[in-house]
Image 1 (cartoon, helix red, strand yellow):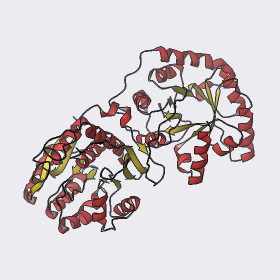
Image 2 (cartoon, helix red, strand yellow):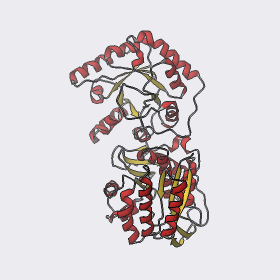
Image 3 (cartoon, rainbow, N blue to C red):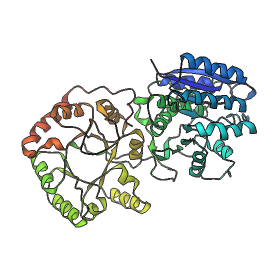
Image 4 (cartoon, rainbow, N blue to C red):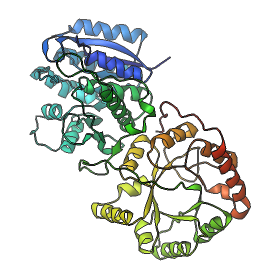
Length: 505
Protein backbone atom coordinates (compact mmCIF):
# COMPACT_ATOMS: atom_id res chain seq x y z
CA UNK A 1 0.00 0.00 0.00
CA UNK A 2 1.20 3.51 -0.82
CA UNK A 3 2.43 5.42 2.28
CA UNK A 4 -0.17 7.77 3.72
CA UNK A 5 0.39 11.40 4.69
CA UNK A 6 -1.87 13.30 7.04
CA UNK A 7 -2.06 17.02 6.43
CA UNK A 8 -3.62 19.05 9.22
CA UNK A 9 -4.17 22.42 7.60
CA UNK A 10 -6.68 24.98 6.35
CA UNK A 11 -8.86 24.94 3.30
CA UNK A 12 -8.41 27.54 0.58
CA UNK A 13 -11.64 28.36 -1.21
CA UNK A 14 -9.54 29.62 -4.13
CA UNK A 15 -7.81 26.23 -4.48
CA UNK A 16 -4.32 27.70 -4.35
CA UNK A 17 -2.76 27.00 -0.94
CA UNK A 18 -3.57 24.93 2.13
CA UNK A 19 -4.95 21.45 1.65
CA UNK A 20 -5.32 21.99 -2.11
CA UNK A 21 -1.58 22.60 -2.54
CA UNK A 22 -0.78 19.78 -0.12
CA UNK A 23 -2.80 17.34 -2.23
CA UNK A 24 -0.95 18.25 -5.42
CA UNK A 25 2.48 17.99 -3.76
CA UNK A 26 1.90 14.60 -2.15
CA UNK A 27 0.39 13.13 -5.31
CA UNK A 28 3.47 14.28 -7.27
CA UNK A 29 5.41 11.73 -5.17
CA UNK A 30 2.85 9.04 -5.98
CA UNK A 31 1.55 8.98 -2.39
CA UNK A 32 -1.89 9.41 -0.84
CA UNK A 33 -2.90 12.44 1.23
CA UNK A 34 -5.48 12.30 3.99
CA UNK A 35 -6.69 15.95 4.25
CA UNK A 36 -7.61 16.93 7.82
CA UNK A 37 -9.17 20.40 7.92
CA UNK A 38 -8.17 22.39 11.00
CA UNK A 39 -9.60 25.68 9.73
CA UNK A 40 -11.91 26.90 6.96
CA UNK A 41 -11.00 30.06 5.10
CA UNK A 42 -12.95 32.34 2.81
CA UNK A 43 -10.31 33.59 0.40
CA UNK A 44 -9.46 34.29 -3.19
CA UNK A 45 -6.26 35.32 -4.95
CA UNK A 46 -6.14 38.79 -3.35
CA UNK A 47 -7.60 38.49 0.14
CA UNK A 48 -8.47 36.27 3.08
CA UNK A 49 -11.91 37.48 4.13
CA UNK A 50 -12.56 35.11 7.04
CA UNK A 51 -10.93 32.25 8.97
CA UNK A 52 -12.91 29.85 11.14
CA UNK A 53 -11.09 27.23 13.19
CA UNK A 54 -12.57 23.72 13.27
CA UNK A 55 -13.72 22.81 16.78
CA UNK A 56 -11.20 20.79 18.82
CA UNK A 57 -13.83 18.04 19.19
CA UNK A 58 -14.21 17.68 15.42
CA UNK A 59 -10.44 17.75 14.91
CA UNK A 60 -10.02 15.07 17.60
CA UNK A 61 -12.67 12.93 15.89
CA UNK A 62 -10.84 13.19 12.56
CA UNK A 63 -7.61 12.03 14.20
CA UNK A 64 -9.27 9.10 15.95
CA UNK A 65 -11.15 7.93 12.87
CA UNK A 66 -8.07 8.05 10.64
CA UNK A 67 -5.86 6.41 13.27
CA UNK A 68 -8.19 3.42 13.43
CA UNK A 69 -7.91 2.64 9.71
CA UNK A 70 -5.43 4.92 7.90
CA UNK A 71 -2.41 5.56 10.15
CA UNK A 72 0.15 7.91 8.58
CA UNK A 73 3.76 7.38 7.61
CA UNK A 74 4.30 11.14 8.12
CA UNK A 75 2.26 14.13 9.32
CA UNK A 76 2.39 17.68 7.94
CA UNK A 77 0.73 20.75 9.45
CA UNK A 78 -0.25 24.10 8.01
CA UNK A 79 -2.88 26.51 9.32
CA UNK A 80 -4.05 25.16 12.69
CA UNK A 81 -6.58 27.87 13.46
CA UNK A 82 -6.39 27.90 17.27
CA UNK A 83 -4.23 27.08 20.26
CA UNK A 84 -6.71 24.34 21.22
CA UNK A 85 -6.18 22.68 17.83
CA UNK A 86 -2.42 22.88 18.26
CA UNK A 87 -2.77 21.03 21.57
CA UNK A 88 -5.00 18.40 19.92
CA UNK A 89 -2.29 17.92 17.29
CA UNK A 90 0.34 17.41 19.99
CA UNK A 91 -1.77 14.75 21.70
CA UNK A 92 -2.43 12.98 18.40
CA UNK A 93 1.30 12.86 17.58
CA UNK A 94 2.02 11.38 21.00
CA UNK A 95 -0.57 8.65 20.43
CA UNK A 96 0.83 7.81 16.98
CA UNK A 97 4.40 7.68 18.27
CA UNK A 98 3.50 5.21 20.99
CA UNK A 99 3.09 2.71 18.13
CA UNK A 100 5.96 3.70 15.81
CA UNK A 101 8.09 6.72 14.86
CA UNK A 102 6.14 9.26 12.81
CA UNK A 103 7.90 12.34 11.41
CA UNK A 104 6.09 15.65 11.94
CA UNK A 105 6.73 18.44 9.41
CA UNK A 106 5.45 21.79 10.64
CA UNK A 107 4.76 24.73 8.34
CA UNK A 108 3.90 27.44 10.90
CA UNK A 109 1.34 29.40 8.91
CA UNK A 110 1.25 32.66 10.86
CA UNK A 111 0.36 35.06 8.07
CA UNK A 112 -1.18 34.66 4.60
CA UNK A 113 0.74 35.70 1.50
CA UNK A 114 -1.89 38.45 1.11
CA UNK A 115 -0.79 39.86 4.49
CA UNK A 116 -3.66 38.63 6.68
CA UNK A 117 -2.69 37.51 10.19
CA UNK A 118 -3.55 33.85 10.82
CA UNK A 119 -2.23 33.30 14.35
CA UNK A 120 -2.84 35.10 17.65
CA UNK A 121 -0.67 35.15 20.75
CA UNK A 122 -2.23 32.01 22.21
CA UNK A 123 -1.53 30.01 19.05
CA UNK A 124 2.05 31.30 18.94
CA UNK A 125 2.49 30.12 22.52
CA UNK A 126 1.08 26.70 21.65
CA UNK A 127 3.53 26.41 18.78
CA UNK A 128 6.44 27.21 21.09
CA UNK A 129 5.44 24.95 23.98
CA UNK A 130 3.39 22.13 22.42
CA UNK A 131 4.28 21.78 18.73
CA UNK A 132 7.98 22.64 18.33
CA UNK A 133 9.17 20.09 20.94
CA UNK A 134 7.49 17.38 18.84
CA UNK A 135 8.60 18.70 15.45
CA UNK A 136 10.85 16.67 13.18
CA UNK A 137 11.29 19.43 10.57
CA UNK A 138 10.15 23.03 10.88
CA UNK A 139 9.75 25.04 7.65
CA UNK A 140 9.13 28.73 8.47
CA UNK A 141 10.00 31.69 6.30
CA UNK A 142 12.20 34.37 7.83
CA UNK A 143 9.29 36.42 9.26
CA UNK A 144 7.73 33.34 10.86
CA UNK A 145 11.08 32.34 12.38
CA UNK A 146 11.44 35.82 13.87
CA UNK A 147 7.91 35.68 15.29
CA UNK A 148 8.34 32.25 16.85
CA UNK A 149 11.56 33.35 18.56
CA UNK A 150 10.52 36.94 19.35
CA UNK A 151 13.83 37.82 17.70
CA UNK A 152 15.04 41.05 16.13
CA UNK A 153 14.07 41.27 12.44
CA UNK A 154 17.70 41.56 11.36
CA UNK A 155 18.83 38.41 13.19
CA UNK A 156 20.97 36.33 10.79
CA UNK A 157 19.08 33.38 9.38
CA UNK A 158 21.55 30.73 10.66
CA UNK A 159 21.08 32.13 14.19
CA UNK A 160 17.31 31.92 13.80
CA UNK A 161 17.57 28.26 12.81
CA UNK A 162 19.85 27.52 15.75
CA UNK A 163 17.38 29.16 18.10
CA UNK A 164 14.44 27.17 16.70
CA UNK A 165 16.34 23.95 17.14
CA UNK A 166 16.95 25.02 20.72
CA UNK A 167 13.17 25.20 21.16
CA UNK A 168 12.85 21.53 20.25
CA UNK A 169 12.69 21.21 16.47
CA UNK A 170 15.00 18.41 15.34
CA UNK A 171 15.65 20.11 11.99
CA UNK A 172 14.83 23.51 10.52
CA UNK A 173 14.57 24.78 6.95
CA UNK A 174 14.06 28.55 6.79
CA UNK A 175 12.68 29.14 3.34
CA UNK A 176 13.92 32.08 1.31
CA UNK A 177 11.40 32.35 -1.48
CA UNK A 178 10.27 35.79 -0.26
CA UNK A 179 13.79 37.24 -0.33
CA UNK A 180 15.30 38.89 -3.40
CA UNK A 181 18.26 37.94 -5.54
CA UNK A 182 19.04 35.76 -8.51
CA UNK A 183 18.91 32.62 -6.38
CA UNK A 184 16.16 31.27 -4.15
CA UNK A 185 18.09 30.04 -1.12
CA UNK A 186 16.74 28.16 1.91
CA UNK A 187 18.82 27.77 5.05
CA UNK A 188 19.10 24.08 5.96
CA UNK A 189 19.98 23.11 9.54
CA UNK A 190 19.63 19.37 10.16
CA UNK A 191 21.58 16.73 12.08
CA UNK A 192 23.25 15.65 8.82
CA UNK A 193 23.88 18.89 6.95
CA UNK A 194 23.84 22.67 7.17
CA UNK A 195 24.06 25.28 4.45
CA UNK A 196 22.15 27.30 1.88
CA UNK A 197 20.13 25.10 -0.45
CA UNK A 198 19.67 27.09 -3.63
CA UNK A 199 18.29 27.11 -7.16
CA UNK A 200 17.90 29.94 -9.67
CA UNK A 201 14.84 32.00 -8.78
CA UNK A 202 11.77 31.45 -10.95
CA UNK A 203 10.67 34.86 -12.30
CA UNK A 204 6.93 34.69 -11.63
CA UNK A 205 4.40 36.62 -9.56
CA UNK A 206 2.32 33.46 -9.25
CA UNK A 207 3.64 31.82 -6.09
CA UNK A 208 0.52 31.11 -4.03
CA UNK A 209 1.00 27.86 -2.09
CA UNK A 210 4.80 27.55 -2.24
CA UNK A 211 5.20 27.12 1.52
CA UNK A 212 2.48 24.46 1.66
CA UNK A 213 4.01 22.68 -1.34
CA UNK A 214 7.49 22.66 0.18
CA UNK A 215 6.39 21.32 3.56
CA UNK A 216 4.10 18.67 2.04
CA UNK A 217 6.82 17.52 -0.35
CA UNK A 218 9.25 17.26 2.55
CA UNK A 219 6.76 15.13 4.48
CA UNK A 220 6.20 12.90 1.46
CA UNK A 221 9.93 12.38 1.04
CA UNK A 222 10.30 11.48 4.72
CA UNK A 223 7.41 9.02 4.38
CA UNK A 224 9.49 7.33 1.67
CA UNK A 225 12.38 6.94 4.11
CA UNK A 226 14.57 9.96 3.41
CA UNK A 227 16.32 11.79 6.27
CA UNK A 228 15.50 15.48 6.65
CA UNK A 229 18.49 16.82 4.69
CA UNK A 230 17.73 14.64 1.66
CA UNK A 231 13.98 15.24 1.96
CA UNK A 232 14.63 19.00 1.80
CA UNK A 233 16.49 18.51 -1.49
CA UNK A 234 13.51 16.71 -3.04
CA UNK A 235 11.11 19.31 -1.61
CA UNK A 236 13.20 22.11 -3.14
CA UNK A 237 13.09 20.34 -6.50
CA UNK A 238 9.32 19.84 -6.46
CA UNK A 239 8.57 23.38 -5.27
CA UNK A 240 10.69 24.91 -8.03
CA UNK A 241 8.99 22.61 -10.54
CA UNK A 242 5.62 23.79 -9.20
CA UNK A 243 6.64 27.44 -9.54
CA UNK A 244 7.62 26.88 -13.15
CA UNK A 245 4.13 25.49 -13.78
CA UNK A 246 2.26 28.20 -11.84
CA UNK A 247 -0.82 29.69 -13.49
CA UNK A 248 -2.71 32.97 -13.29
CA UNK A 249 -6.13 32.78 -11.61
CA UNK A 250 -7.94 35.93 -10.55
CA UNK A 251 -6.37 39.32 -9.99
CA UNK A 252 -3.70 38.26 -7.48
CA UNK A 253 -0.93 35.71 -7.25
CA UNK A 254 -1.90 32.47 -8.95
CA UNK A 255 -1.26 28.98 -7.54
CA UNK A 256 1.84 26.87 -8.01
CA UNK A 257 1.14 23.48 -9.55
CA UNK A 258 3.14 20.52 -8.35
CA UNK A 259 3.12 17.52 -10.66
CA UNK A 260 5.04 14.42 -11.65
CA UNK A 261 8.28 14.47 -13.62
CA UNK A 262 10.28 16.74 -11.34
CA UNK A 263 12.67 13.94 -10.43
CA UNK A 264 13.99 13.62 -13.98
CA UNK A 265 14.90 17.27 -14.65
CA UNK A 266 18.61 18.01 -14.07
CA UNK A 267 17.91 21.76 -13.96
CA UNK A 268 15.99 21.19 -10.71
CA UNK A 269 18.99 19.76 -8.83
CA UNK A 270 19.93 22.28 -6.10
CA UNK A 271 23.32 23.30 -4.76
CA UNK A 272 24.28 23.32 -1.06
CA UNK A 273 26.79 25.85 0.25
CA UNK A 274 29.81 24.87 2.31
CA UNK A 275 29.44 27.74 4.75
CA UNK A 276 26.87 30.20 6.06
CA UNK A 277 27.47 32.90 3.45
CA UNK A 278 24.45 33.01 1.16
CA UNK A 279 25.43 32.30 -2.47
CA UNK A 280 24.87 35.01 -5.07
CA UNK A 281 25.79 33.13 -8.26
CA UNK A 282 25.07 29.71 -9.70
CA UNK A 283 28.07 27.38 -10.07
CA UNK A 284 28.30 25.47 -13.36
CA UNK A 285 30.71 22.57 -13.79
CA UNK A 286 33.19 22.83 -16.67
CA UNK A 287 33.12 20.47 -19.63
CA UNK A 288 35.41 17.68 -18.45
CA UNK A 289 36.63 14.47 -20.11
CA UNK A 290 35.14 11.15 -19.02
CA UNK A 291 37.36 9.23 -16.57
CA UNK A 292 36.58 5.85 -18.20
CA UNK A 293 38.14 2.79 -16.59
CA UNK A 294 39.23 4.25 -13.25
CA UNK A 295 41.77 2.24 -11.21
CA UNK A 296 42.51 3.05 -7.56
CA UNK A 297 45.96 2.13 -6.27
CA UNK A 298 47.60 2.35 -2.86
CA UNK A 299 51.20 2.96 -4.00
CA UNK A 300 53.12 4.75 -6.74
CA UNK A 301 54.39 1.42 -8.07
CA UNK A 302 50.85 0.12 -8.42
CA UNK A 303 49.75 3.41 -10.03
CA UNK A 304 52.36 2.92 -12.72
CA UNK A 305 51.45 -0.75 -13.18
CA UNK A 306 47.79 0.19 -13.72
CA UNK A 307 48.72 2.91 -16.18
CA UNK A 308 50.94 0.54 -18.20
CA UNK A 309 48.15 -2.05 -18.25
CA UNK A 310 45.68 0.34 -19.87
CA UNK A 311 43.66 2.15 -17.20
CA UNK A 312 42.25 5.46 -18.44
CA UNK A 313 42.49 7.10 -15.02
CA UNK A 314 44.47 6.06 -11.94
CA UNK A 315 44.02 7.45 -8.45
CA UNK A 316 46.72 7.28 -5.82
CA UNK A 317 44.98 6.65 -2.50
CA UNK A 318 47.94 6.39 -0.14
CA UNK A 319 47.04 6.37 3.54
CA UNK A 320 49.90 7.27 5.87
CA UNK A 321 50.59 9.65 8.74
CA UNK A 322 54.19 10.49 7.75
CA UNK A 323 54.27 13.56 5.45
CA UNK A 324 57.67 12.52 4.05
CA UNK A 325 56.37 9.10 3.03
CA UNK A 326 53.31 10.65 1.46
CA UNK A 327 55.47 13.13 -0.48
CA UNK A 328 57.72 10.33 -1.76
CA UNK A 329 54.71 8.35 -3.03
CA UNK A 330 53.06 11.35 -4.68
CA UNK A 331 56.35 12.40 -6.30
CA UNK A 332 56.97 8.89 -7.62
CA UNK A 333 53.43 8.60 -8.97
CA UNK A 334 53.78 11.93 -10.78
CA UNK A 335 57.04 10.78 -12.37
CA UNK A 336 55.24 8.81 -15.06
CA UNK A 337 51.85 7.26 -15.76
CA UNK A 338 52.21 6.35 -19.47
CA UNK A 339 49.41 8.64 -20.64
CA UNK A 340 46.80 7.76 -18.01
CA UNK A 341 45.23 10.57 -16.00
CA UNK A 342 46.64 10.65 -12.47
CA UNK A 343 44.44 11.72 -9.56
CA UNK A 344 45.78 12.32 -6.04
CA UNK A 345 43.33 11.53 -3.24
CA UNK A 346 43.09 13.66 -0.05
CA UNK A 347 46.62 15.15 0.15
CA UNK A 348 45.66 18.09 -2.01
CA UNK A 349 47.99 20.81 -0.67
CA UNK A 350 51.07 18.60 -0.96
CA UNK A 351 49.91 17.35 -4.36
CA UNK A 352 49.57 20.91 -5.65
CA UNK A 353 53.04 21.79 -4.35
CA UNK A 354 54.45 18.81 -6.26
CA UNK A 355 52.68 19.69 -9.50
CA UNK A 356 49.58 17.45 -9.50
CA UNK A 357 46.86 18.49 -11.94
CA UNK A 358 43.97 16.32 -10.70
CA UNK A 359 42.70 15.96 -7.13
CA UNK A 360 39.93 14.07 -5.37
CA UNK A 361 38.38 14.95 -2.01
CA UNK A 362 35.89 13.14 0.17
CA UNK A 363 33.07 15.01 1.90
CA UNK A 364 34.83 15.03 5.29
CA UNK A 365 37.91 16.61 3.72
CA UNK A 366 35.67 19.11 1.97
CA UNK A 367 33.98 20.14 5.22
CA UNK A 368 37.37 20.51 6.91
CA UNK A 369 38.45 23.25 4.48
CA UNK A 370 38.76 26.69 6.04
CA UNK A 371 38.07 29.89 4.12
CA UNK A 372 41.74 30.33 3.17
CA UNK A 373 41.99 26.73 2.01
CA UNK A 374 38.85 27.10 -0.09
CA UNK A 375 40.40 30.14 -1.77
CA UNK A 376 43.64 28.24 -2.40
CA UNK A 377 41.76 25.37 -3.98
CA UNK A 378 39.68 27.77 -6.09
CA UNK A 379 42.86 29.49 -7.34
CA UNK A 380 44.35 26.14 -8.34
CA UNK A 381 41.19 25.26 -10.24
CA UNK A 382 41.28 28.62 -12.02
CA UNK A 383 44.73 27.56 -13.25
CA UNK A 384 43.38 24.33 -14.73
CA UNK A 385 43.59 21.84 -11.85
CA UNK A 386 40.71 19.35 -11.99
CA UNK A 387 38.72 18.35 -8.92
CA UNK A 388 36.69 15.24 -8.17
CA UNK A 389 34.37 14.95 -5.16
CA UNK A 390 32.70 12.00 -3.44
CA UNK A 391 28.95 11.80 -2.77
CA UNK A 392 26.75 9.23 -1.05
CA UNK A 393 23.45 11.09 -0.55
CA UNK A 394 21.36 13.82 -2.13
CA UNK A 395 22.67 16.54 0.16
CA UNK A 396 26.27 15.49 -0.54
CA UNK A 397 25.54 15.57 -4.27
CA UNK A 398 24.16 19.11 -3.87
CA UNK A 399 27.20 20.17 -1.85
CA UNK A 400 29.52 18.76 -4.50
CA UNK A 401 27.61 20.59 -7.24
CA UNK A 402 28.15 23.91 -5.44
CA UNK A 403 31.89 23.59 -6.11
CA UNK A 404 31.38 22.95 -9.86
CA UNK A 405 33.62 19.84 -9.86
CA UNK A 406 35.03 18.05 -12.86
CA UNK A 407 33.84 14.70 -11.53
CA UNK A 408 31.41 13.41 -8.89
CA UNK A 409 31.78 9.91 -7.45
CA UNK A 410 28.59 8.01 -6.59
CA UNK A 411 28.96 5.19 -4.12
CA UNK A 412 28.97 2.64 -2.84
CA UNK A 413 27.23 1.04 -5.82
CA UNK A 414 27.41 -2.37 -4.10
CA UNK A 415 28.38 -3.29 -0.52
CA UNK A 416 32.07 -2.77 0.06
CA UNK A 417 34.58 -3.56 2.79
CA UNK A 418 37.20 -1.15 1.40
CA UNK A 419 35.75 1.59 3.61
CA UNK A 420 33.64 1.47 6.78
CA UNK A 421 30.64 3.71 6.06
CA UNK A 422 27.00 4.06 7.13
CA UNK A 423 25.55 4.31 3.62
CA UNK A 424 23.24 1.79 2.04
CA UNK A 425 24.36 0.64 -1.43
CA UNK A 426 23.33 2.99 -4.21
CA UNK A 427 22.61 0.20 -6.67
CA UNK A 428 22.47 0.69 -10.41
CA UNK A 429 19.19 2.61 -10.15
CA UNK A 430 20.68 5.41 -8.07
CA UNK A 431 23.83 5.41 -10.19
CA UNK A 432 21.72 5.93 -13.33
CA UNK A 433 19.87 8.75 -11.56
CA UNK A 434 23.16 10.37 -10.46
CA UNK A 435 24.51 10.16 -14.02
CA UNK A 436 21.43 11.97 -15.31
CA UNK A 437 21.13 14.60 -12.58
CA UNK A 438 24.63 15.43 -11.30
CA UNK A 439 25.59 18.06 -13.86
CA UNK A 440 29.14 16.67 -14.06
CA UNK A 441 30.71 13.36 -15.14
CA UNK A 442 29.82 10.64 -12.62
CA UNK A 443 31.99 7.70 -11.66
CA UNK A 444 30.52 4.62 -9.95
CA UNK A 445 32.57 3.27 -7.05
CA UNK A 446 32.21 0.59 -4.41
CA UNK A 447 31.91 -3.18 -4.53
CA UNK A 448 32.90 -3.53 -8.20
CA UNK A 449 34.55 -6.96 -7.98
CA UNK A 450 33.72 -8.64 -11.30
CA UNK A 451 33.87 -7.40 -14.93
CA UNK A 452 30.13 -7.93 -15.40
CA UNK A 453 29.54 -5.38 -12.62
CA UNK A 454 31.70 -2.82 -14.43
CA UNK A 455 29.72 -3.61 -17.59
CA UNK A 456 26.54 -2.64 -15.71
CA UNK A 457 28.15 0.55 -14.33
CA UNK A 458 28.98 1.61 -17.88
CA UNK A 459 25.45 0.80 -19.08
CA UNK A 460 24.00 2.99 -16.30
CA UNK A 461 25.32 6.07 -18.06
CA UNK A 462 28.21 6.68 -15.66
CA UNK A 463 31.24 8.33 -17.25
CA UNK A 464 33.62 6.17 -15.25
CA UNK A 465 33.81 3.01 -13.16
CA UNK A 466 36.23 2.39 -10.28
CA UNK A 467 38.03 -0.87 -9.67
CA UNK A 468 40.09 -1.40 -6.50
CA UNK A 469 40.37 -4.95 -5.13
CA UNK A 470 39.28 -6.40 -8.45
CA UNK A 471 42.63 -5.41 -9.97
CA UNK A 472 44.27 -8.38 -8.24
CA UNK A 473 47.97 -8.78 -7.59
CA UNK A 474 49.01 -8.04 -11.17
CA UNK A 475 46.92 -5.42 -13.00
CA UNK A 476 48.58 -6.41 -16.28
CA UNK A 477 46.74 -9.73 -16.11
CA UNK A 478 43.33 -8.40 -15.02
CA UNK A 479 42.90 -5.03 -16.72
CA UNK A 480 42.29 -6.34 -20.28
CA UNK A 481 39.11 -8.07 -19.09
CA UNK A 482 38.04 -4.98 -17.18
CA UNK A 483 38.63 -2.79 -20.23
CA UNK A 484 36.61 -5.12 -22.46
CA UNK A 485 33.74 -5.10 -19.93
CA UNK A 486 33.76 -1.32 -19.74
CA UNK A 487 33.62 -0.90 -23.50
CA UNK A 488 30.88 -3.52 -23.87
CA UNK A 489 28.80 -1.72 -21.25
CA UNK A 490 29.20 1.59 -23.05
CA UNK A 491 27.94 -0.06 -26.24
CA UNK A 492 25.04 -1.84 -24.52
CA UNK A 493 21.42 -0.65 -24.19
CA UNK A 494 21.34 2.03 -21.46
CA UNK A 495 19.79 1.04 -18.14
CA UNK A 496 16.55 2.89 -17.27
CA UNK A 497 16.70 5.88 -14.96
CA UNK A 498 14.21 5.77 -12.06
CA UNK A 499 11.68 8.54 -11.45
CA UNK A 500 13.30 9.10 -8.04
CA UNK A 501 16.34 7.56 -6.33
CA UNK A 502 16.03 5.46 -3.18
CA UNK A 503 17.29 6.53 0.27
CA UNK A 504 20.89 5.69 1.17
CA UNK A 505 20.87 6.42 4.90
